[in-house]
Length: 320
Ligand code: ADP
Ligand code: MG
Image (cartoon, rainbow, N blue to C red; front, side):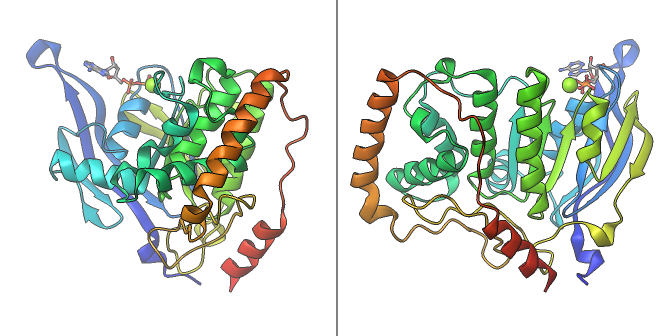
């Protein structure tokens, strides 16, 4: 059994977020305490304006609390420099937003590779990694498209690919299905469920009570505070990738379909020995495919087949 004490990944202590002063003073978060274990899938609900986005932005280091303590993976990050925060964010946190937030002037491939900017990898390597992960999401034939050329569901899958590419330990999603129809919502939730089953920590804001069946814990907020907090899965039953370490989608090569694997040892879990050698081939192939797919009619894959084998293996390994 993994060491429970080391399994805390997020700890907020008496975090408040205040706007305005004097008469105009108001609190988006009020003395907020929250402890999150690795492998939790938390859904946050509550009326509009109760502080859900503020909470997510503070956890994701996009916003700063007015007071209180914040420990992320054991580090006090409440008052580190903006530069360090940006690095930490790029490495540890993947974001998914309601409106997808893809950069409109960049191709799908470039969008997905963006979080790797701090990885130290050469651009070619970054694009190859993006290519691999897009293949996993059945979006490779769209990788040279611009965001506006994709449907909402496709754009959100691109955003999920982008959120995963730097192998973060935490995925934060602010109403990720808010702009999608129920079919696409379902697809997105299936993706998130798979990511969670590998041991990743997910915190998601939603208005849709039906989606809480995917969660291991449901928090209801009211006026910047926790109203109710219910765990539906015991901490000891949370999925984990062995040793309570970080777990990620692993990009193995640009040629083979992406394999979902647990890697609890290394920080950077994207290995691409073959990547450089195959770079030209892949790029040529990809551009041909793009041309082809532009000529032929656009078609959504009807069934989203995925090899379950590596997943089972991953689960087995995590039990060891
Ligand atoms: P939710 O996501 O639950 O709808 P938010 O976190 O966006 O809520 O907002 C919480 C409260 O903080 C709201 O009352 C909102 O008006 C207020 N708020 C958010 N951002 C700002 C801001 N930049 N300036 C002033 N008030 C803000
Ligand atoms: Mg919000």
